[in-house]
Image (spheres, rainbow, N blue to C red):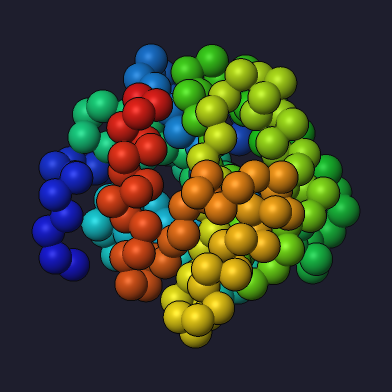
Amino acid sequence: MVDNPYVHSVSFIKSAVLPKDYPDSDLPEIAVAGRSNVGKSSLINRLVNRRRLAKVSNTPGRTQLLNFFLVNDRFVLCDLPGYGFARVPKKIKDGWGRMVESYLAERNQIKALLILTDVRRQPGDWEKQMFTWASHFGYAVIPVATKIDKLPVSKRKPGIASTAKGLGLNAKQVVAWSAVSGVGLEELWARIDRVV
Ligand SMILES: Nc1nc2c(ncn2[C@@H]2O[C@H](COP(=O)(O)OP(=O)(O)OP(=O)(O)O)[C@@H](O)[C@H]2O)c(=O)[nH]1
Ligand SMILES: [Mg+2]
């Protein structure tokens, strides 16, 4: 991948499920949340300019642990497992809820939650739940509409507007994003800079 002016170093720290296994760090942390297959791992890779740092898959439910990455020796990104993959057994789904909820509740260094929604789908109760959790725990929210490249250019603005409306926001608050074309990269870095 070509050089990305925002990144000078990045590394995988570790995976974890339980709080006792979270990395020992007091750097500001940013969590990446969204439904399964929405493009969380792809967003991380594009953001830090690495093809295969976070595992990307066509099979939803690929990321099943909390994965932590150190960026620019300045902040930590946490790739959360996707919510709501239909073929995952109920027991694992309940486990997902507990894992993510205890992470959000106990990880004091979280500064912001990136909430991803596919621009082609209306945000639902789950996304609203994440907004509620974020404000409950006092985290900034950075809403991101992913896969904008999948819409023809003429449908992009309306797509963002409808995502924003579904989240109770105005269009300017939502970052239009494509991990394929790099749309949104500058905007997302600016928002991250503001919180870390
Ligand atoms: N066209 C397009 N495809 C994307 C984009 N982002 C992700 N994808 C594709 O969407 C699929 C899922 O991407 P992932 O990044 O693995 O999604 P995820 O949210 O991490 O998925 P889980 O870990 O299963 O929750 C892959 O086939 C990606 O190549 C994007 O911006 N544009
Ligand atoms: Mg993933």
